[in-house]
Image (cartoon, rainbow, N blue to C red; front, side, top):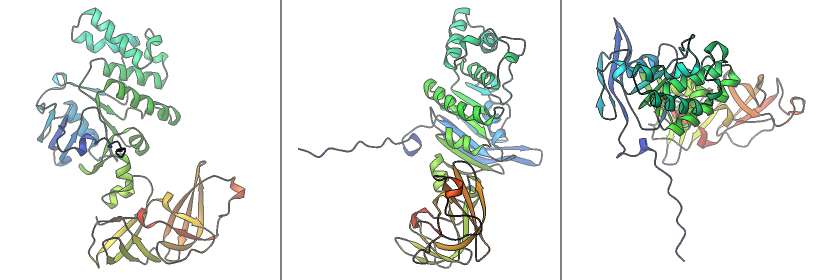
Length: 380
């Protein structure tokens, strides 16, 4: 009997050199007077993606979104949608719709009238408007609220109406500017999955701006980290979290322990780094070649750091310290451990036991350990 072949893992479009991008931003820049808000940004987004632009205030993410919508004209560069150059097209001619953080619903119109407004502006036949509005409201589960006014709806319901109004025109690209920012935490978490499910059902390409890391990680197929008008790194959420390409990205996404050191060995299967901060030898197996003698930083996520009250053998990736603080977060606790060098290291542990039953407490002397494959060497 021939061996059973394993199913091949599907190649994502951005991993396929033959795949054609649906949205192309080609070396876009935007200046306001002497201030450069966006600086030579290039990226490709594929059909059906939910792509996020993530960054702090002033990073250029909203300006880039507004250029995609046509509300701002680039100072240089091009924007292509489905192989058509739309750089100079006004907003109303682009196959694009935008959902704003404020939702911008008309207060005197009913839910049904709000959703139908854009279709009426296009002077479509009444029966087409009726059918498309009904389908859009069914999609976001708001059909039973069709006759209500916006002030009779909750924040989450208004968000759904705004989404229905954005989708009813069947755009090729939907832009979302902080779409969940006005919702409370619990409703925002619930709505994240609803929005992803809707996006998968309609198949429209979404580009979302957010400053919420958890939101971007939960919802996105890929993300771009922006800083000072440039893109620092593009990748799937797990790639950016596990393999940041710079210290900026490592510290921007989640919490990170970073140790400075000097490369002592650069072998085929590992890199050895001497670090006074870590008070130990840092041994990293998953790393690109790094020249001996170069100064680097090694990043380790807190959840990868194990903590124990008993000594551990060896000096590789093993440090000794004292627990100075414990942050209790319900499902996990973060232990802040001070090493002999003065460096504070974070170690995260799931709360599997009640607080009073835990072995590690304040001011305990503890030992930290992490696996060699969990360190990431940062050279920039």
